[in-house]
Length: 272
Image (cartoon, rainbow, N blue to C red; front, side, top):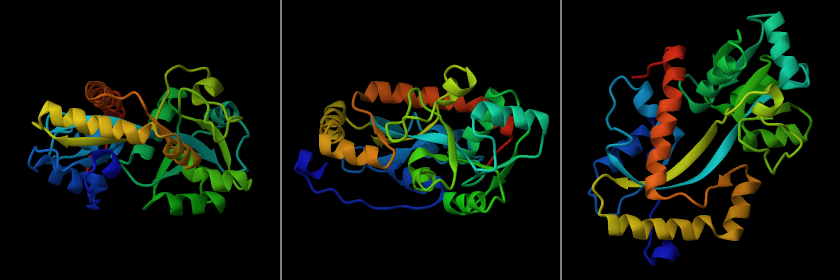
């Protein structure tokens, strides 16, 4: 972006509240194009659905520039579990409440993807075990303390390639280039439209002038469409999105919020 804009860019990490602290700061910043947000599914699809005391509205308080990439979720199991997703579902139905799955925490994108999967596969009775991050959940999966985790494809690949875990399905419209032999959830279960990815976006504060947004969008697309950069993203399990526009990005955020709303309500999750 610095090269494309011929302008130095400083990355400032504002950790906390799944990105909400940094997002709130950007939402309140001057709408001059000099303060941008690198947001995620958590900050722009889930935050307003989960928060009891929201500090910003992910649609009204931002001017999206582009959705830049997505990391598909995956259903990952210990090798002691059935070898296909269809067989896993059958086993859960035959033994309700026996299987538990781990996620990086209550209310995270991966937790809610797990809840969405349970409904899609036939209202499965699978317990949720929240962890403080993906790494401890994966450790317990390796130790067979839990039978399943919902993680991203990229972060599961090392253990998958070492034959320590099985990735039964990916939650994307098409198979992952990183693991082309693994079916999608829809392929494995005969469902339609099951997609869940941890996506990222570039956004500016609401009210940023359209010519400024257009310039930022052009610079963003210069980066995302770069062949070398795209290859680097794919190697770590992120699919670059090269055709996003400010208008389509806003529509995408609204669609994702609407899609996750019934999942959040069914899970009964609220976070301060």
